[in-house]
Image (cartoon, rainbow, N blue to C red; front, side, top):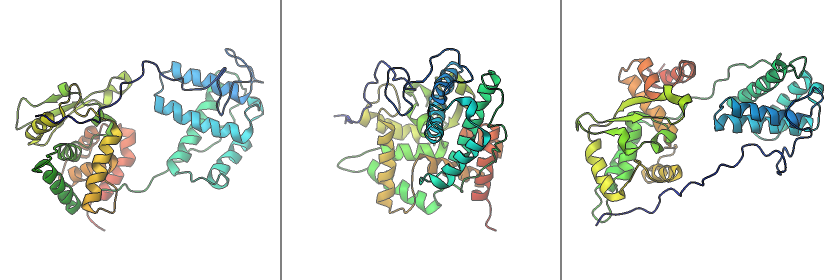
Length: 329
């Protein structure tokens, strides 16, 4: 009798909560001090943030970007005061705010977060100046220096062999065979796809018509991300493992019909059983895939396309992969 797992994703709600708590709602920004539309130069920072939120939604910014900018501007409103008129915010106030983020907040601020917060300030005040709501842009003098984060973690070949061995053992367990750990691990090591892309794989995105050359199509519903869509080769034994997995889990529409967190638990369980001292998550496997492809002689631009990265993002990521995969100094 086929085994049915009970970790299916819950049915999504038919509505979406508003991204920005504004009129009549409680929140750390609270209701705007002035009403919209039509910001005046003497408008409060809270009102300007609300107007900028509407602007980002109209322009089709991603939810992740909106949430990140919202968080950054919330910190600014706490620092200078949410009722402060936007015309009274000077470059010195922004420099003091950035120094507070680095040294006075008591919470670590990673290089990437710091760089993003400068970008938020420049975009926000640049928009106010462009709309002629303020006569000068106090964020214009801020220098958004390129910040490089540390080299990413990757798995070594003996780590990979141990993990694959454990996953195979679970696949062929005589009492409770489970093909999912091996299917997930082999998929990520071969394709280097992100967690969101793995969760988004529909069954009709898999082309297994040629058993020796299986492929998966990575697709996006949002037209803004169509440049990331691509066709990737799968491991040669994927069809065989998938048949076992399908009999066990009975997926109806998607390859993985569970929460992303469930898939993280699968990887964490393998790493714990293997006794690894390093993480074994989606990003580690993604970078491991890229480093192995580099070592195997794949052209750098093909690796970039395989990962679905833009040329700008690839500048930093590619340099890191080259350092990880290149010969020791």
